[in-house]
Length: 131
Image (tube, rainbow, N blue to C red; front, side):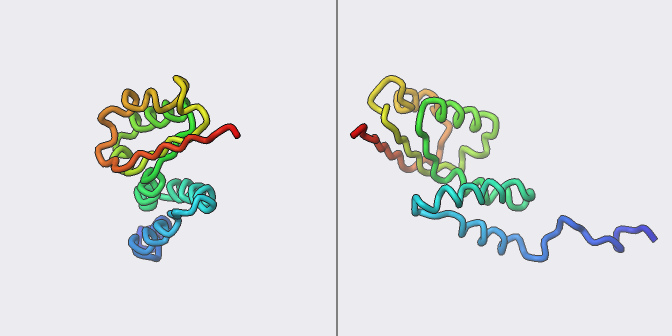
């Protein structure tokens, strides 16, 4: 009496995948104060199951913020290792105190991301002042 019908699929959700995707979409916030918490939740959602991964990654990579050159290099490496993520990036923000120096991610941005972001629509540059 050990057949598959006796054991329900433990990976199947009782909700349609569209309901889960709508809930995941609610974790995307335009408010900066909510973004850190929402990002943590989206990272967790991406690890729960395959059905949640794509929608979570779309939200995580829709708007990317880079603070320094190592962040740009890491982001470029992530895109090299997972090229499907390139399609998800629509906004890119560079922020920091060194944007006017050669240590800036801005100086290498065209080289590091050349041809990788086909859907990029907006680049925002925010220079944080020392004072």
